[in-house]
Image (cartoon, rainbow, N blue to C red):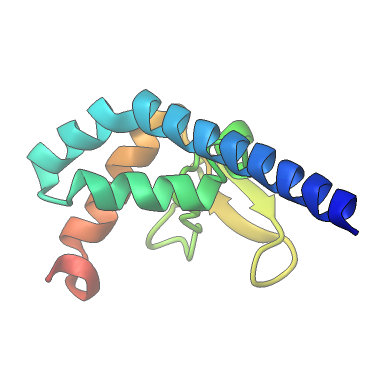
Length: 124
C-alpha cells in the first residue's frame, strides 16, 4: 500500500510540474502581447493571459493549434463574423460549432481585446 501511495504521489508531482512548466511557457510566450493589448484596450493582461491559458490548455488545444483561436471565440452569426471570414468547426457546447479562425495569435488577442473592451455587456 505504501508503494502504491508513493507511486501515486510521484506521478502527481511529475504531472503537476509538467502542467506548471506548460503554463509558464505559455505566459512567457504571450506576456508582451497581452501587455500591448492592455495598453490599447485597458483589459488587464492578467485576465487575457489567464483566459488564453485556460481556453487553450497552455497553448495545446486544437483551436489554438489549427485556428490561432486562443479564447474560444465562436462565429456567432454573419453580423459578427461574416461568411467570407475563415472558420473552424469544433465540438464544444454542441457538436460542430463554428469558431473564428485567425491568421495569427496576434489577431486572436486583438479580437479578444475588442470583444471585451467594446461590447456593452463586457465593457464595464
